[in-house]
Image 1 (spheres, rainbow, N blue to C red):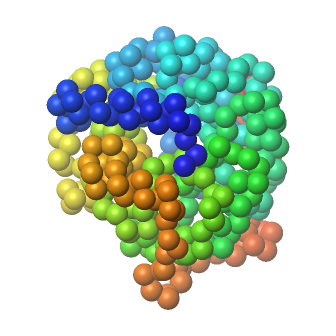
Image 2: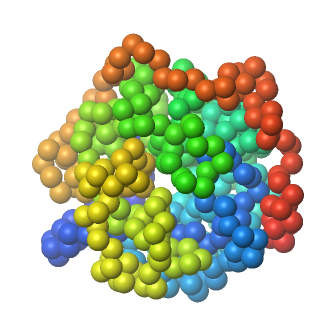
Length: 383
């Protein structure tokens, strides 16, 4: 597992404490979105489609700290947008580290080398660099040429300077299992601490809607990816969640496990589904009808979701509070997970974007070496 012992100990102690206090619902990771603007416009992203006046706004460090104190989660993930565009992101990170929160600052890597001097290496800080494939495959996913090379260079520099570096990769219907394994090899060779993987979520506002995976195809894809595994691969996730992706362990969604705070307040009910906002964390917990969400609820918005933000908290909870989860995790850590077989011999549907990426013509209609004009205008203020 690509997770430091100190972090595992903190999380396990936290989960057991919540259990002893009789709390049924509690947060594990706070998804803190201090801004929405980005210097990329990825085809599968549904997070940055906001009016310009909203994209110009930022949470203050004080607002971020208040949200962290309200929530109490031991881990804080800072997605976006692109957090390194935030004018005071270094203040936010320093404040969270002082509070001994384990921080994952998510970034596409384009600005990482430029801003690295603002941060100090710490066991509490990890840069989580978004990498969806090797070379042109990643550039196709983010709809901009040359991003992969910049991100890889930034990863190398951050590691050389003593920072914790992890990666996060999102897989869609056009994913090639062989290329995914090649990606894991490349990232392992770079020396990243761990890799986070997840299927994409069906964002209603995402520019490309035909590339999301139905639930059965998600399991099929990950079984194909893990049909050949390597002990050198290290994942920054619980073993039970990885088994869940392969269809070999059943998990229920715990949408309250990763609550989201952003410019509008506490998002209802979760990071992926936006059905309004609460003013306080307690209002979020009290006002949402949690039984109406998750795959078991029959809610169509949740039917195909197998994303880590909904299920990782469940996996962690089962690891530390059930004997079955604990022994399964121990077995996987000690002996590894056996290779998998796909549900059938039928290949996943390969979309045109995949074949275009392989021929060097990825995202021909939307990829460029430049960011969209409106994002350039916004990002230049904070870069």
